[in-house]
Image (cartoon, rainbow, N blue to C red; front, side, top):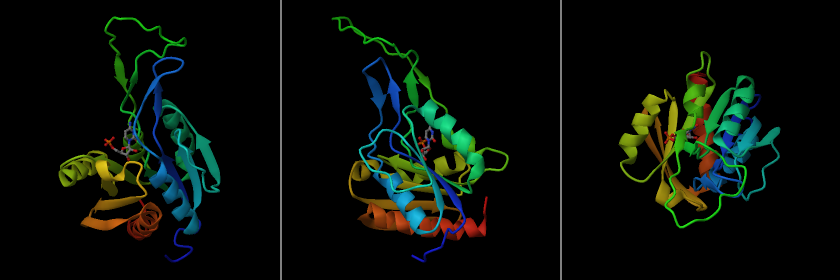
Amino acid sequence: FQPGLLQGKRVLITAGPTFEAIDAVRGIINLSSGKMGYALAQAALEAGAEVTLISGPVCLTSPVVKKFIPITSANDMFTAVKNEVAFNDIFISVAAVADYRPAIAHTQKIKKSDNTMVLELVPNPDILQYVASLPTPPFCVGFAAETEDIDQNAENKRRKKKLPLLVANLAQEAMGANDSTLILFDDKGKHTLPKAPKIDQARRLIEHIATIYKQHPN
Ligand code: C5P
């Protein structure tokens, strides 16, 4: 794409999974390789943006962004996003944030027994919804990995979270893979980016974001 497409723009990206501790050595984690988020960070850099990448635990090397913030849990990610959001024009929430965390994170390793164990879970904050509801939010882009009824679920999420753009993908296809199909939902309707390597999809998506961002910066 055109270099300089996002020149002077500051882009905040969350990527990867969050890890919610059960005890000192165990936890709950969503399946997420971080590949799409890191590819978007790379594509945003190529477009001339200043990028801040907040990442959960992944086995990837970050592109050379302005600021890289490694985090573990959803609450850590929430704190980092709250600290950074005011300095950014565009927020792309690619992270697979755990919806729940254990009510208690034990500091010692829980001992094994023959009894059934019940784990109490409490809801995590919805980071994207918080950002999109700020009085002057950045331009917000959400992701939704769906296993079924993609169109309906995606459009519902876009409306509920008040997002100008929501990107849906099929969880079974995208998880950990190098290629993915992306379906974009915005005010103009639905637009499919046919299956391609994630870095190519990221470049196309950055192009689409730049186009609609210019039309309505918020
Ligand atoms: O509602 P759902 O989790 O499917 O929405 C997905 C989108 O919301 C993703 O962009 C994800 O990064 C974001 N999200 C979030 N905080 C949560 C849950 C999801 O920012 N607790």
